[in-house]
Image 1 (cartoon, rainbow over the protein chains, first blue to last red):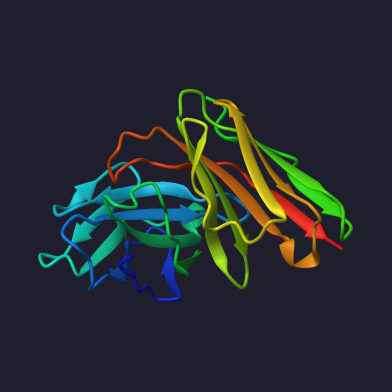
Image 2 (image 1 turned 90 degrees about the horizontal axis):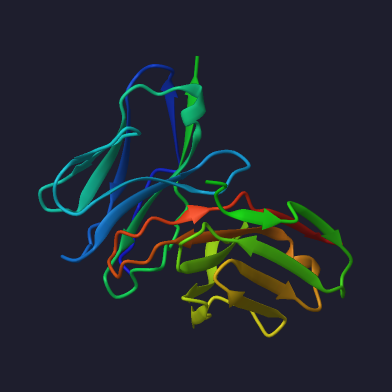
Length: 111
Length: 116
């Protein structure tokens, strides 16, 4: 499976935008980029996914580099409830059902 | 929708005892996954089922672990005998498999297992 690299931790002030980076230089053409997050003492939850184009949903935006070797999850206005570990995961058609979690980025949000 | 339901939420047992974790997936979902999370190894997939059939159990640590899915609405993960190194949070997740790389997995709240 192609690997992803994320910073171990990031900090943000409440109500400011947060850009969470993910490097995936060995991504293949059929790999989708997925983001999940895990709030404290909860199971992971889906955030967003994309293939080539930037994506927006009610939770976040996903910006994908033109060469697809990196992507950025954007939280437009971080709140205290967004404090979580964010996982960037690649999924290909061969192992489509599997989610392979890395170490993720722990986001701290402060007042 | 009640989401994925797991029981018990917490389990404390002694080494050597049998432990059974239970999961009820979201109604209508046809894929079910068992994950384990520890500080040392993070989140790792143990086994997953499609239409009640085990597809990939390569993540199951050893023969002490077994998982079953007797019907579409129930699955168990059993550890017999349990060991202290099995202490972890065990998550169950379900999804509606459409055959692509975009299926969203929905996770339960987890079972925190402590083996003394």
